[in-house]
Length: 140
Image (cartoon, rainbow, N blue to C red; front, side, top):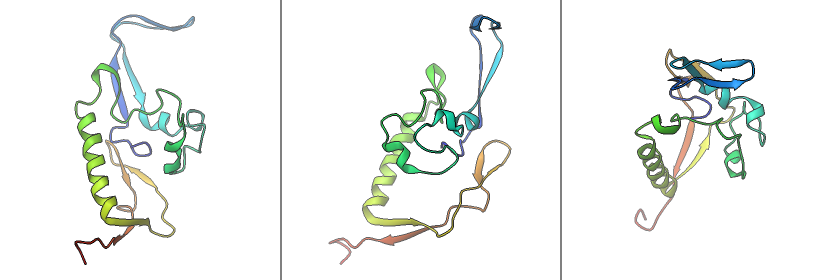
């Protein structure tokens, strides 16, 4: 979700005149676009690890990113209606899979996203992942 957000932009209209600095005021009803990919891949917003590299260990840090730099489901009162469901569904699926399998990314795999007109997908068709069933008491 960070390296290849499902929606590359979040668009909003200002609800009132907003002064961002002494030189810059956005008038009411002005369209504002937030580039998810740009903010989520900028090193200055991800101080713990390089934003350009896939590193799951970044989430173990106390403050892995600058607040506001990660918003895969948008944010605020108009965030994605399915955000909580998606998080719970992902946790349930991961728990099921991790309990039963060992996983390893294929040797030499490098994530290279491809923009498909709306969002991103892996340019080589998918991630090569090896899976090995973990024997349990039931499967013996």
